[in-house]
Length: 118
Image (cartoon, rainbow, N blue to C red; front, side, top):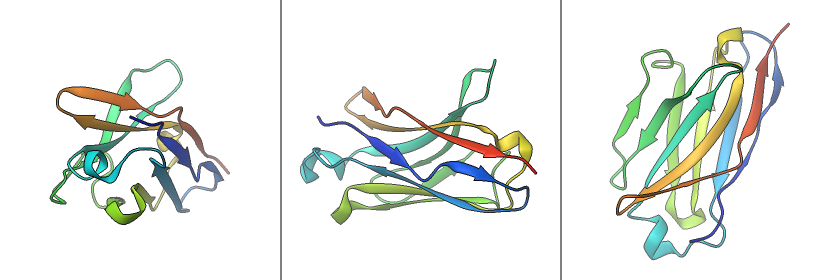
């Protein structure tokens, strides 16, 4: 099915922005396009929680904590999903994971660290 490769994490000050990318370079288009793609995050000592998902048709779903600040989008031609994160706060600090769901199967990336600190 091919790996998911996240990038774009880093250190940012409160109020700043980051854009995360998740690429599926070895996933064929006929598999990527009908997949639901999602971003999750896991802070130290906490469980992995949903951040946002985007369905094949483009409908989106967000955790209440990120609504109005984060935007998930997908580019099927590039087999990539993005997470634009604005107005970041220290509580957004976590490892961010991308996943792909199709036919009941879930695939995860390795994660990218996002640290929000002054």
